[in-house]
Image (cartoon, rainbow, N blue to C red; front, side, top):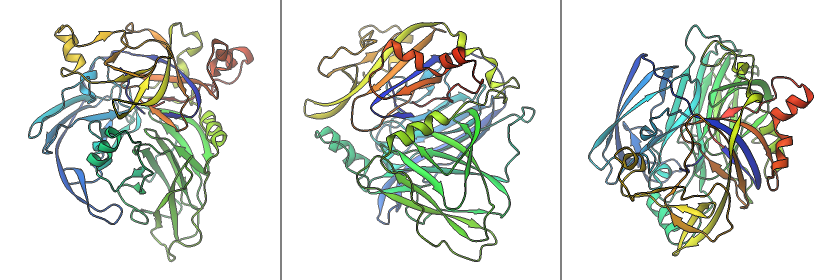
Length: 483
């Protein structure tokens, strides 16, 4: 099934994916969440937001590798609700992931208990509501999976951690936005950018001079890529969605919808306050917002112009993405180095090419993959499969390659062999950034470029170059969940 999350421009991205199964008994962490509506004022006007335990954004989930997470969700909205756990791998339990098609929505006034395990995972992720444009009203929050104490981490423990949830925001409520699409219109330009649920100058992070802190940055917005930067400070990238990276210094980072980064920032400037900035990328009008980095001994408020960032430079962003490399000598969730897997020997058994498109069908704005625009069934696909209910869906209802047909509606289901390695090519011919999420799977990004993918494009894959040139083991693009 196709879901959403990393981003790419007009061109293609290739990845290799593998599903695995692991069973283990580890510590349990219990969460009891009450989902309600409530008044929020992120852009200075009253809006109806979705709160979790009265919070907007929702509470962070703190966990350690292999922990079992028991999350009881009580839906006190007046409509069905689901939560998806962006980046957490689902090993033969995709029904826990909370997207339409795998799980029954939680009816109003009812509850559902998610049972998840962060098996062999570390890193920064987030959760979000997946139905009815609820994400445009809130209901999202951060997820942190820390390494076990005996597993070495390739950097000194920071003095503290901060979660930064950045994203575009609309003053229209989620029902109005959904109605726009149903009326055949695309989403308008957002009204603002939020940092941790706050508009301009609303969020503040207090630090001590001379110490180093980790910032876990996630783009939880609807459609806009954002550039993130901190006035007067450089960021050392150390992790991308569960994979330690080669530690590269950046002055700013493009964070596309669904992506999560961990950066280390050293407070090495004079004792004053500094701007934290997020601004839109690839838009005619540049929308930005600020938060405050507050030194605890500061004697000066933020001052000077807001630091500028890149605007519409696509190559700049592509080159930055290519610069992110897996740290193959560092331990991951286990003590063995992340590069101990011989990825150059992967036996690819199938190539799938997915091309996105946009059009109107029956007067509604629709989006499709290989000409098929997904429509849900009354019975979730996983339940129909488990109980062998016929006639609900058809495996193979979406082709492996684009057909050139006009867009049509279907419950698109693609079959795959368990434990097979699959080469997946994404092509975007639209004039906007497209965001994908490979729900519950781990994968390796091996290539990206402009234009149309062909089999000859494999010669540009990073691991192919490594074999040909005997290059460093750092060649593999960072593993991620979002493409």
